[in-house]
Length: 396
View 1 (cartoon, rainbow, N blue to C red):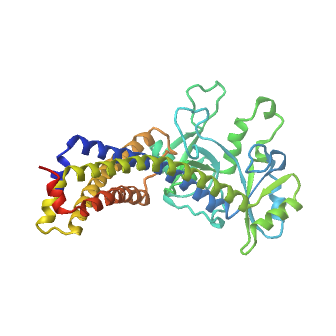
View 2 (view 1 turned 90 degrees about the vertical axis):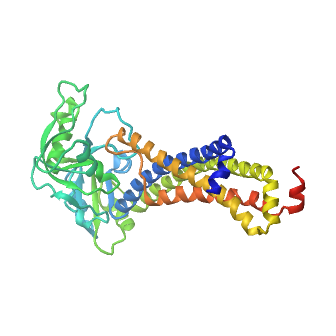
View 3 (view 1 turned 180 degrees about the vertical axis):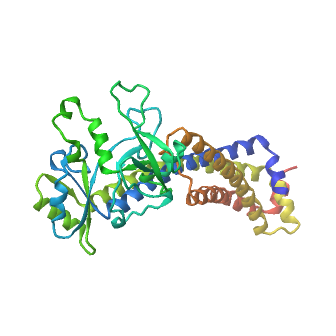
C-alpha cells in the first residue's frame, strides 16, 4: 500500500511516466507481433524450401524468379536424373484476383495444385478434418481460408472468388470441400488445394484470348518441386538437373534458404530498433521521475535512516516503486497492443498481419518490468547514500 501511496503523491507525474512505458510497450507489442508473423512465414519457407529443389523455366529465371511456363513433359525428364525421388508439377492462381481491399503482410490467398508427394517433404501438414483431394472437383482448405469463408467439410466453394469488378468473361468453378488443414502459421493456411487437372483448368481460364486457341493448359506447369532420395545432397542434385535437363533452371535450396534468413534478420532488426527507441524514452522518464521523488523525500529518507532503516531497505523501496511503474505500464501497454493487433488483423484478410506468441508476451512484459527496475537503481542508490543528519537538516 505504501508503494501505491508514494506513486499517488504526484498523480500527474506518475501517470505521465506510466504513459511513457505504456506507449513503448504498445510499440514493442505491435511491431513484435508483426515480426513474429513475418518470421513464422519465413521459418515455414526455410523448412519447406530447404527440403526440396524448386525448378522453373530457364527463360524466366527459374521458379524462384517467377513467371513463365514449362512443358509438363519436363517432369519425366527430371525424374530420370540420378538421385531424384519424385517430381511434382506446380500450378497456382490467386484465390481472390484483383482484390486490393485488404492488407496482407504474408502469403495472399491462393489456389494451388495439390502435391501428392507431401510425405517426402520436410514441411509437414495434417488435417483437422477430412482428407486430401482424390478426384477433380474437390478441394481442401488451409485453416485461415476455411475460417475466412466459414467453410467446413461437405460445403461447396466457388474458386477463384469473383471480384466485384469482374469482367463478363470471368470464370469460377464450384468445388466440394473435402478437408481442412490444421493451422501451420505459414503458407498453407492461406491456400486452397485442388487436383493438378483442375488447377490447369483455372490456368487455361486466365490465359490471354490470343493464347487460348494455341496453348494446351493441360500440358503446362508453372514450376516443378523435386524431392531427392535419402542422403542425396540437394544442392549437388540441383546442379545435375541443370546439366542434364534443358530449358529448366533448378535453384539450390541453400540459395533460397539464405535469402529467407537474410530477409528475416533485416526485418527483425528494423522492428526491434524502432520499438526499443520508444522504450528507451519510457525508461528515461522513469529515471527522471524517481530522481525527483528522491529529491522531494529527502527528509523522509533521513527519518527512516535515523530510526534504523538500512541501505538495502531504502534501495528496495525505490526500486520497488520504479518496478511497479514498469509493471503497470507494461501490463496496460501489452493489453492495448494485443487489442490493436486483433483489430488490425481482423481487417487484413485470412493471411493476417500479426502473431502474438508466448515468446513475445514474456519478452514484452519482462522488458517492461526489467526496465522499471533498472531505471530505479540510480535514484535508489542516491537515496541510500544520504547522510541522515544532512537529510534531516536539509528541510526545515
